[in-house]
Length: 341
Image 1 (cartoon, one colour):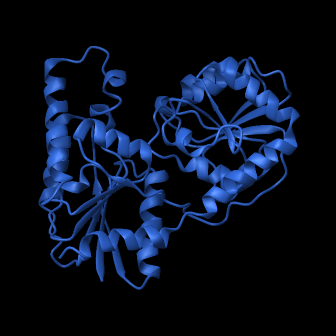
Image 2 (cartoon, one colour; image 1 turned 90 degrees about the horizontal axis):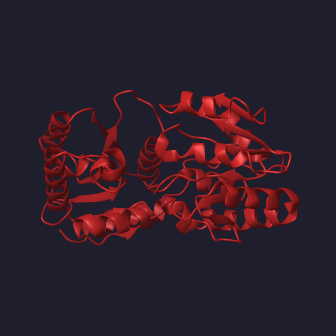
């Protein structure tokens, strides 16, 4: 079978969790004996006119040479194909759950733009335009039900590599990823002033919030910014950490949770952190805290003084990750539309 995976990539070309998701899905189909091509769409969302053009571009894509088409992230589900399944990463969040956060005083024009996006997405993600919709996690499914009235089964994507390894429980916490306000790294920087244990905080990655975060942390010698790190370094930092704080706002999925678990490390997340709060089992594979620095600090201090429990938490998380399967998910995607035509 010849399969098109239609993806949305940033104009900057920066690779993150979504890009690793695309690559892993493509490789899975190829390993199953299919011909799988990525059809990348550069989705510049700098203005509403460009967002509209992105939708039209996907609508006009010629995918007639493919037996099956998989859409992934906005605006890719505008594609037209008789065998179209969506493995939904996320919609344009500034018009969904982050609208009030992004626009403190939204204009009537913005409200109308949001309404238009909701109408387009709702129509495109249902038959006859789309044969089946799956999401990467329960957070995305709940969002799709709330804003679009569409039920969708969650298929948790496994990790993009098997190279994560267990290591010693060291003297630092590790936070990797894009330094964006929604990732809420500032919450953990605030937390460090209440941590009594002699634990360091290592932060890897770059992003638009980097300078703000560095200014926040400049008076705390325990906090170190590593910048962009190689994959080999990433595996090493995970392997030697005590725990992984991951406290974003309503995260769609967050491979960081899985990467931590695959490294045998507990995850500290928050009640409003989205899918991480669905995956982490409080007191079993990590902690789910209120988004309050004092509360998080107490959990960090507890892990510092209860390292055997931290190890047990990490093993529980590792067992959860081991149950996930790319091939199982790929078969579900194929069967969802090929059995209907």
